[in-house]
Amino acid sequence: MYSEILVPTDGSPASDAAIEHAIDLADRYDARLHALYVVDGAAYSSLEAGAEVVVDALESEGEEATGRVADAAADAGVDCVTTVASGTAYQSIHDYVDEHDIDVVVMGTHGRKGLDRYLLGSVTERVVRTSDVPVLTVRQPTDE
Image 1: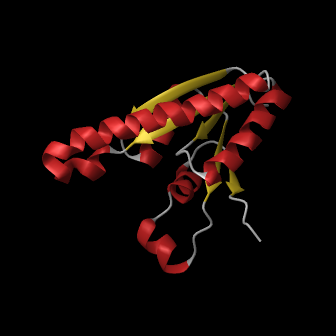
Image 2: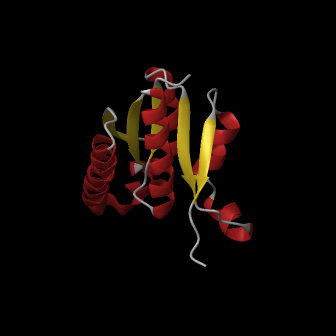
């Protein structure tokens, strides 16, 4: 059913929850896992001279985040490909899905509500609404 599974990550706890599910799916279906981190450099273009420093830091963060996914996948015996891309997050995810024949996307959700969700938007929500492949959303565990 699934041979190529994408798990976009931003290194957050919400992403961590999705990573566990993605690795489990990849293991069950003997699929390859793709870990993707997207650096949105356009968001920092107004910083002028400091923008390059910020983008470099985000790329390093992306390498670390995707590396953690690859390590967890290796521990589970799952083949994993890592990519740090630049662009708008939801569009980069769609492009990656198309370019790599992804069968399913597994994404975390922060569970924001109300004004926070309206103001901040949701990459996961945009991907869910516009994706041509199934998207499994995994809610970040809450501390009770």
